[in-house]
Amino acid sequence: MTPDATRAPERSLVLWFPDWPVTAYLREKGRAADAERPLAVMANNLVVACSALARAEGVRRGQRRRDAQARCPRLTVVPADEARDHRAFAPVLTRIEEHAPGVQVVRPGLCALRARGPARYYGGEERAGQLLLDVLGGDELSHVRAAVADGPFTAEQAAMAATSPAEPVFVVPAGASAGFLAPLPVSALAASSLVGDLPGAGAGAGARAGSGARGGASASARGGGDLVSLLARLGVQTLGQFAAMEADRVRERFGPHGVRVHALAAGRDSQPVTPRTPPPELDREVAFEPPLEIAEQIAFGMRIAAEEFIARLGAEDLVCTELRVELTGDRGERSERVWLHPASFDASAVVDRVRWQLAEESAALRSGVALVRISPEAVDAASHHAPAIFGSGPEERVHHALSRVQAMLGHRGVLTPDVGGGRWLAERQVLVPWGDRPPQGRAGLAAERERPWPGRLPDPLPSTVFSPTRPVEVTSLGGYAVDVDDRGMLSAVPAQLGVGGRQLGIDAWAGPWPVVERGWDAARARRAHRFQVVDTEGTAWLLVCEGPAWHAEAVYD
Picture 1 (cartoon, one colour):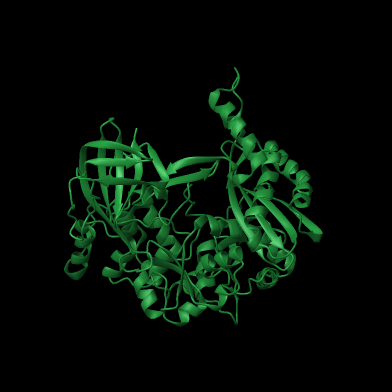
Picture 2 (cartoon, helix red, strand yellow; picture 1 turned 30 degrees about the vertical axis):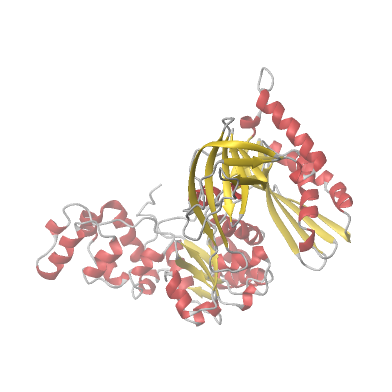
């Protein structure tokens, strides 16, 4: 909905959490050691946030990765994760709403409230802002800034430009927004999360421009430059200069959205604060006092919480398809993992995941478990998982059978095959626990599979792969062993294939195709040659010659 430009700005209180992606990473991972090192969060090889230590060494937002690492060689690089930012911000919002309800989430790390209610309740706008900062400071968020002004945009700019660690609260008096915004650069429009998509120069903009340098700038804008760069080329450097432009001229050039941005620059922010609807409390926590060390005791203690968790989801007509399990040890150590399910979780499946995590990640917990938290990572409408009217199909029966066997044997008791990346067929076979996604590499399994692998066998692949490979013998007509020299030349023509005590003739063969790995590592270097061989019985073999030894890697059935 487009804000009404005639509406008077309402007093808004904005809370800004500088470098929130960094804070979210540290809070979720619980790595105190990382807080003592320069850290940067990156997306598309650009810095989107950095810690104070990194900033002190010259790292800045918008820098390329190589430039940031050149300025700070010991920089710790963390990939951006919007889900992590939202997840870490959710409990902070809950904490704020306990003292000042009606919070609008602008983005993770920035939220707005109507200032009128908190100001009346706590005895003034500045006192309300300071109280919220004191509340959040108890949650180890002492770096938060707060500002109050006419409209969320002005309050956002005040929080970012006028606050400091020594003075974290700033109040722009009513009616003074235009004067406060006037000296700020027009780039503040691009940096704001409350402006939205900035309008570009409309068609025919150059025709209405004046002559000389301004006409030249507008002519170049006909190509579609954004508003901020166009204003800079026109010589408009501050919000005050932009606000001084005639509204009619702004409308002609930039349209209704341009008029909206022009009003923001003039301090006439007609956008109201839109409070969020708090999501239902779906998480469940179980605290153990004293801490427990036996997995079966912990699983038994989770049964009631798991049933309540599933019942609460059912009351919202939802099912959980991805479950986050967080385990906290008595000494503060943490184990966190997201579990998947082929269909949707029930109470017994939730308890199974807790038990499996205790078994597989026992090294991360060196003391008894003091707290278990379960929360839905992804949910779906319950109607999408309702049983069929005329009974379940074969796939549903297979799912129930495999899930039941997995519950008895453990997480890796039922495995499904997938194809991964690599040069050798045995390492391309990836076994995935039933219900899990294939293992995700740096770019995902599909991208890992499509990476260039010099020496990889092209399609079609053999259907039977030997792991480990089977030793065979390849000889010439005279019974001499066949091998390959350093130049890839055969010592003789392959004529006989010895497999498991049987001697088979070779009707056809092709190769060799070299496979060279890790030439830089003497301990792990490998040099081999592949051959495709068809014996006299019509069986096609994939053979590997490595030094004097021959092995059968696979068979084309």
